[in-house]
Length: 148
Image (cartoon, rainbow, N blue to C red; front, side, top):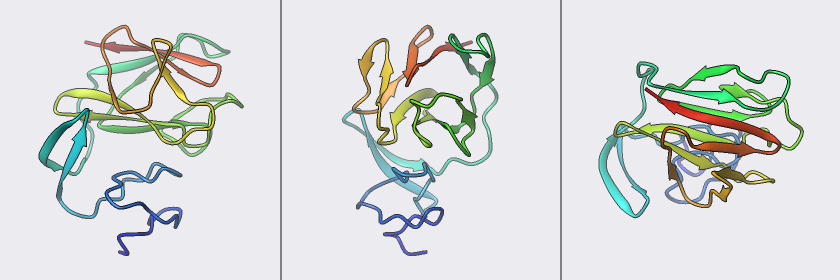
């Protein structure tokens, strides 16, 4: 695989990208990697494989499907189309945000969305560790993060 091209959408990648900013595809080829999240270096972080037991949920707080719960796995992309969690909101980008389980904690990352991602009304510019009760907003859609 060419390390500078996303295998899913063929977008040119920036050095060190772990996920494609266009489609959310995991682009690291190695079995393990070093990832800098929140200024902390996580060494030899294994590539996500399979699904972790459902420990957390997203609950829709707005829209026609208000109350619907989505169990979270290791890595999930949220967006309008071809995502793990599909949100029917014209203000949501096709691949809007990513939630990933890192060392037992769920982390939310914006994937370069047009209308940004918010946690508790704050813009997500860097990865954010989610806590029980956090409110996530993508476009006009609001979700509640719940962790057992």
